Amino acid sequence: MVGCMTATRAATSSHRFVHRNLLGIEGLSQEDARLLLDLAESYIEKNRAADKKHAILRGRTLINLFYESSTRTRTSFELAGKRLGMDVINMSVSNSSAKKGETLIDTAMTLNAMHPDIIAVRHPESGAVHLLARKVNCAVINGGDGCHEHPTQALLDALTIRRHKGRIGGLIIVICGDILHSRVARSNMRLLTLLGAKVRVVAPPTLMIPYPEAFGVEAFHDMREGLKGCDIIMMLRLQLERMQGNFIPSIREYFHFYGLDREKLSYAKPDALIMHPGPINRGVEIDTELADDIHRSVILDQVEIGVAVRQAVLEVLSATEVMQ
Ligand code: CP
Image (cartoon, rainbow, N blue to C red; front, top):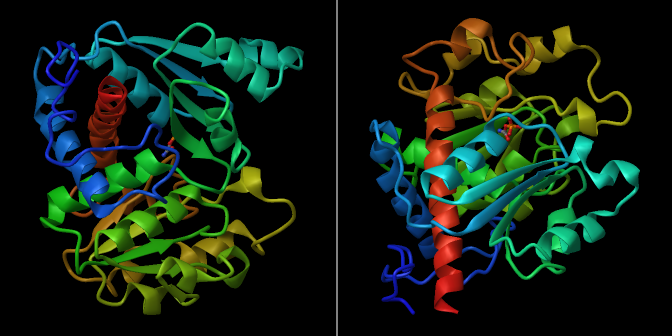
C-alpha cells in the first residue's frame, strides 16, 4: 500500500514510525522524534506561502475532543488538519452530551462509530487519553492529559530550539516554574534528554516533582543557580486549576523568587533564548518586557512551529495506518 495514492513522505521515510497513537513522548525512540521534527521542518515554509493547502490527507477525518480550554493546541490541530485536506470536526464538550452525563468512554465509542481516522484529545485527568485510545480503532493524539504528557508541545519546543540553535544535543535547557503540575515539563524532560540536552528544572520545593533524577534532570530551588550558563529558559505557568490548597505564599513573592526578569536573565548565557508554552501570565512567571523582547523571546515562533509539528504528527499517524 505504500505506493498507493495515499502514501505520504512519512510512509516512504527510511525510518518507519510504528506507533498507532501519539500518547506521550515516553516510548518514542530518538529516530521517531527526529522523523517528526524533520517532517515538521518541511511544513514551516509551506505554511508561510499564500497557498497553504497540501491535500495529502484528503478524505480523512480528524476530531478534536477537548475537555479543557485551549487556544494554541486546538486551533493548530484544526489548521494542521485543514491544510492537509482533512475534514476537521471540533467537538465542543460544553455543548455535547458529556453535559448530560455521558462518560468519556461512551463519548469515545460514539465518535468511533462515525469512523474518524484520528482523534486529538485533551482531558484534565492524567491517563484519560490512554484509556480512550483502548476503546477506539482510530489513531489517538494526546493534546494534554492532566499533569501527565503533552507530546506535541514538547515536539514543537524541541523544533523551535533546533531551528534557533542548530542543535539540541549538549545545550543546557532550564525549565522553570510549576514543574509539579506541568505536563509540558514532563514531556519536555523526556524529549530533550532523549535528544541529548542537559536539562535542569527550577521550582520552589512545593512545586518540584518528587524524583527529578528519574527523568535524568538536575533540580534547583535557587533560580539564579539554575540559570547559570544556560542556553534556553523555558518558563511555565502556575497551573492553578490543578492545585488543591496553597502551593505558594503569594503571587508577589513567587515572582520575586521565580519570575524571570532582566536581573535573573543575566545569569544565563548572553544569547540565551526565552520560551513559554503559553498562555502567559505576565508579571507572574515572566516580566512583560522580556516576554515581548524580540531579541530573546521565541514564544510566537513556538506557536508558528506548533502548526507544522501537528501536520507532521497527522501525516505520520495516517501513514502508519496506510501501511497496516
Ligand atoms: N501550550 C498550550 O497547550 O496552550 P493551549 O492551552 O492554548 O492549547
